[in-house]
Image 1 (cartoon, helix red, strand yellow):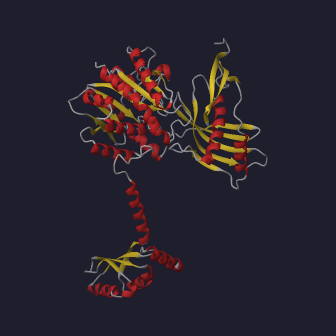
Image 2 (cartoon, helix red, strand yellow; image 1 turned 90 degrees about the vertical axis):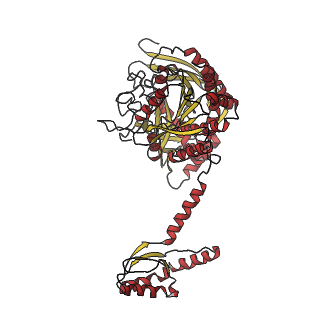
Image 3 (cartoon, chains in turn red, purple; image 1 turned 120 degrees about the horizontal axis):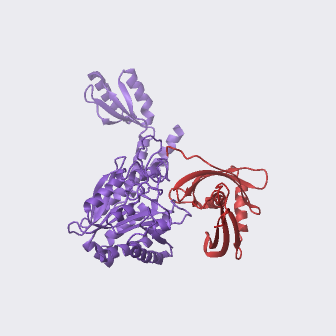
Length: 177
Length: 419
């Protein structure tokens, strides 16, 4: 507890590569949840011991695949009801995972636990510059309230420049569902 | 069109299968004897290749006639110029034949026995009900199906009873699918029920258990919700009951039990995923279980299976004070979780609901515990969020396989600690 400021947590964690379970990296972090205004994202400071795997080759393959599509990519329900993700959609899924991490960070409090539940819909937006742009409609699952929250996010990505969420907004849940 | 037909005929000849593309079946009603005679004469024109499905007999009675496509025009002109009334019963015979073929292939693929049932996929409510009947058929001396009530939308609430005899023996209650979107639970339920039936007489633990105890297993505890996850919204959690004065549907069946009902661990808002309902046991799906367990009077353990989070939980969720049997339940959970991890290394956390996951009131196991069922546990199966509710079907069997020894640990403990 830090008087008049908020609650600070010191964490020691192990990062595990989702694509390679044996590849792990130690990490320490400090998270500060601010008192009062719940609309401010928690402060996060972290250090990674060692290096994350280089993914340049896979990144470039994905980048070129999308760049060379004649029609804009469109897809929905990733994973589908049975948990399937087709191999072609796996990078789109992973990109949503990273981008939703940003959205989750920006909207987390000490009383929330968010997970990406599903990509309802994703549409590529063609750009004249070198970036790839995707307009996602995702479902976030919030563990404490058990709510499924639709969220729109616009995601920019480039192999060298990484991920950026340029716009995101919480969507209303349909009352009849 | 003609070229297509010739080609089709050639192909058909090559495949030695007769095609009926474009053929129609006409229902003809002759109004008098003269018209009957005309129809008979028509049928004698062999070049037309007419095929009576129902021969012309007397006026007023229908004549059904299959007309090959090339003869259609001629036949219709004949009927119309003689003022013989007719209607087209079948627009294209081949279309019907194709449909029939598809249905037949499909039904050949339908499961004929539990040996061929695909445990590694997610199934519909009907497929699961069919499988249940097969299981009972195959193990008539061990398994029976009882109905304990009806859902809001009047679906049957079925429970599988595993019993080797006796009268009102001490019993273990298992349920899966109370939250309909947690598909891994119903799938694990099917596999587990099958395992119990198969292993009786083979596995020493389950055999000893069933020799003196009964097992009651409700696999689709929330059928309305489950049907809705298939038809409309894969993420539906609650029941499908209508809430007076609200557009929002459904009550959280795991906040509707009469144990700490109405606290901060549930919601009073019908639109919420944790809506507790207008009063405890308002949901027929919950009331049915309450009545069954209370009526039975000899249930010694309630194990309610959920997903996801990889946890093994025991009471309480509605208060922070530890349950009187906290230590024993904690030790048992620890053992079960270790044995679960032995299969594939899957790590579970364990403890009381309130300590491990969050405050939750009106839960199944809190009600069971407060009503004398000491060994009350909730499982939260795989995973920890990567796929969440959308767990890939290739994880069904591993999940069920690793959970089995944990379930056995609890059931053996119950057997060995009568009260």
